[in-house]
Length: 460
Image 1: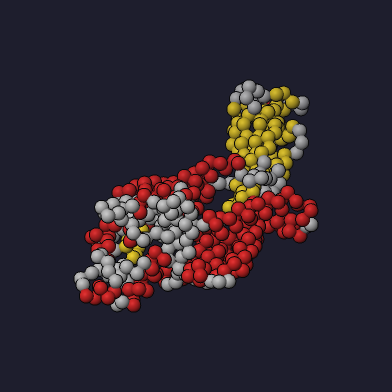
Image 2: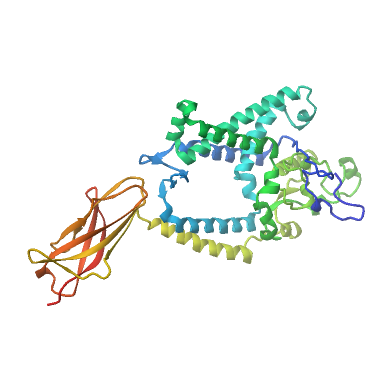
């Protein structure tokens, strides 16, 4: 592939590897990768896939370990329940994640895309492996005479896997128990849900059977962030042009003083987005390390040092020194440390219930029979758990009586309850205008909180 015009202008930066000059889609058939990095990525991917498929079935205290039920506003993340009242925590966590992405990208480039991103894992470690298993390597996919029957089988398997994965994603939204009920019930009882699931499965299937790498190139905004976040010290997958240039075929390289690159183009053949990494960092590169493995195998065969293509920064290739702790990286690190510390503190001090008790505004004391006086209070309880709460109130520091106005103080899961109540005290116990008073909130016989407030009376 010629990436330069006769005048030396780099035209590869003005085009996309998956689009022809005529503007038509150019499908990529990458060579099957292998090597040290590919094995490591496979292990990481299997661990993440196992986490994806096992997590919906894990329970803690009778509740899912992880669920994002937007319909019922039920959110549990790693066993911690969250609700709309925790929006501030969600906003802070999102900001923390964004800053961590910025920091990670400034230092390590697009490492996330190649090792952790769900799109890459599903594409390269699930669907691409099935494709290689059924159709063979890239050359067989293009030349096999039995291609049609194999493609039909491949796409049937693709859709079946898409349907299975879609159901597991659904378990994260409605829970494994409800999903099991839907599966075991007659389809006629859930026609709307079944129709929606087939549509979602079809969309999922289309992504991995047809759209593929274009998700990373045209849809994902993270690739475009590279243009703002990367600098000359960012560690990316890079071609060592100082070692490799000028290029030349192996026989020619023996005769002349050429670089280590023998221009075999195997790094291009194995690339899942069809780029030539020797042209430098590009938008399409997802840091999948396939080119590193392939180039290292070639270097072994020709008795040259490995690492012609490797994780390195531009400055590292030019100077031989890696400088990670740049002012930008330090700045992001400080901000991230502050945000992470604040988020951790708020999570550590977060309670299952938020309880507020205030004297009703504009009200003084009320005379009660039997030589007693009362104050009227408002109580608000936020139940952050997924269990019902039956709260009882009692005066802790004085011999007083609490009379709840209305029904019992029952709080539904992830709900807010408000009520009014009277605290009644003997007059002889109130000898000043403001008497400190402690109100205990008891749930299931256990004291969960003590509120300090004041009781208004008649000063003697």
